[in-house]
Image (cartoon, rainbow, N blue to C red):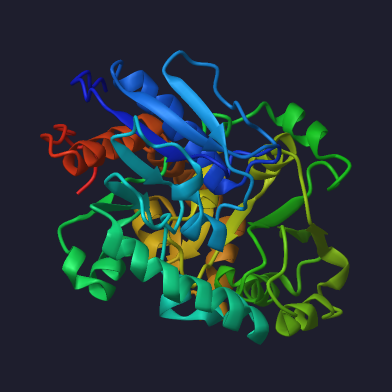
Length: 394
């Protein structure tokens, strides 16, 4: 895909999530910037960067300025527009869930999801965090939506939720699907197992779960499904990469102590990118029964590594994975267990899911995401949107 319609604009992008250890939003921003520059050779970018990585791009059409405050912070909302020179900027884009106030130029932002508005219990078990962080988002997301010329989001499920919550923005919310990093791909079997031999014994059969420790990830449901499926099969392991925990997670802890499976659970707080890719490659199944997602990249990463996926039959995971995954009710642990058993004990079914997953994952590219973002920029600037064909937003 190539879009060479000149935008002739200078866009400021808040790139402070690009850090030494880059998060999901940081990777989203990094890929978006690279592809925007490749798509439109007249587009100039000014980046607001974090002091950890003040110059993340060496490119003649990129200029950077640091702003030493957390991205999702009150200083972003109330101080950034006063401290950062925007005299040469035509448009401001925040690739995360809030906009600075009092911007002197039109703005767009990427609202990945509105979980904090729909139900803070999705995000944390902590009543204190629900009060503090919940108040932050309940205040600033609506203000940012009202301020934005257009809103980008990462799935049709999120678009519908945003437009239902903010009907005045109906028709001005655009889907820009995330892309998939080509880093995630099928590896030679020997190389993959060698990379994770210190984590799990080579040639072991295991179910993999990946994600932050927020309640909406439904890790208790994933482990409960595993217990339903493999309580009587001592050869199947459960490997969980869980970056951090949002609250006490009592139920998950209780399940992890169940004597039928306790010795077969491997938990990891951190893995390298190479280790994660190898885990995807070697897993017998990837389990992602999330209650709610704005998008949900891990199932696509697993598919790109040739791993069968079990995920939710509702919301963004169902939309994003489509027929390439085994989809189940995330509240039904028996159904999760049955799906896992089908994948691990039916070789033909697993092979079919692998083939469909590889083909499906290949359709999610950052070039497509950037083309949709560029089209939104043009709308916000009063220009004709790009003709994206079958690969853009709606």
